[in-house]
Length: 180
Image 1 (cartoon, rainbow, N blue to C red):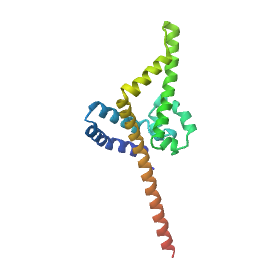
Image 2: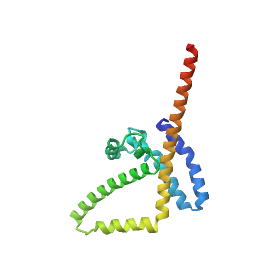
Image 3: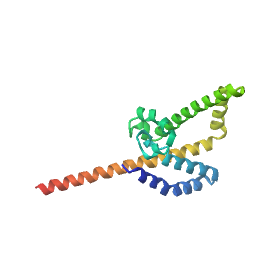
Image 4: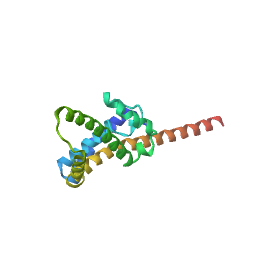
């Protein structure tokens, strides 16, 4: 399994490729920026290793505490943390739940002090409709970037583990031949 710094290098070295391919496919700078930004964010801060005490976990600074329940709930390298699509979906939903909780608290305090009205159901319904009907291309582009960043991490983990297994087998075969 590569180190956190190796994962960072992979993310930074593949970012130009992701941006170039995205722009070549979409011919759209905004979508390219969303895919590339999602890829960079996912590769450096939002990847599968948030389920352990990793460099990604450390980068959250004072906010890293929000990932402690996530670490307790998920086993490292499980389908739910490192799995394609499902791992990213779980992290996105998890983060949105924490953001919504913080927003509810802040708005409730603001309502108490400033006395304005706020309808949460209408707000959520309106934003969900916006993301799924009017901004679906942008939402899909951002999610694609997040997923690509996570997959670059998972694929490098898999390749690194397979390489180490093959190296171990080769060393064992060499030791057996030397003993004979």
